[in-house]
Image (cartoon, rainbow, N blue to C red; front, top):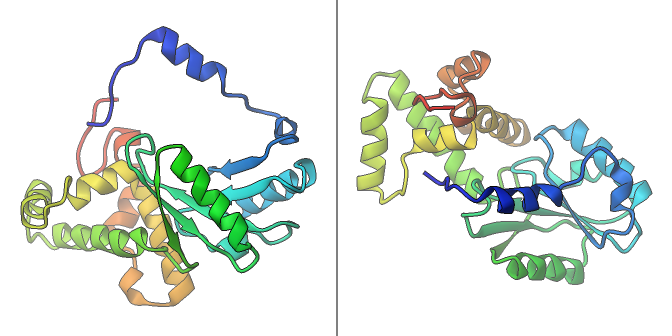
Length: 228
């Protein structure tokens, strides 16, 4: 749906700009966006390493979709700001800018300016479980899974109902497949842990599908089947 082919020459040009394997390449960076797996320990360890490598003026941001900014920032000597992009990042204009107590208004404004400079539309969000979009969106996907698990409607009809009845560009189950059902489950678990609110209790079908590696588009099967 969101894919298009590009020339090999253009693709090679993009790939040539990507460097991996040595964090020391960030030593002279002015601005850093972390986008590793949604795992608190991995993010914390990465930022601790980068905090030792990067110059003090470098601004750190995290693309976390649900983890508390204050927890990710434990052990680093500079403020951390959330910069939550949405999948597919080249298409979706929104970026949630999550402020932290340690970040000055100047740092937050600079992050917003960067977002605008790359063609995004930033919104300011105070730190809270799930922020704004996922606080609304992920429980909706979870509820759609519940409706399907109860046999109330088919996958296709649930999605069609929400597309036509709620003016959504894609239904919640197709969206869950696009996001990745493992990511949906991880976000629900974070929000449940942070709030203790059973509204965020993951559906058993979701847990089972994640265990079976039926994660959506990235594995070729979720609520729908995809060509890989």
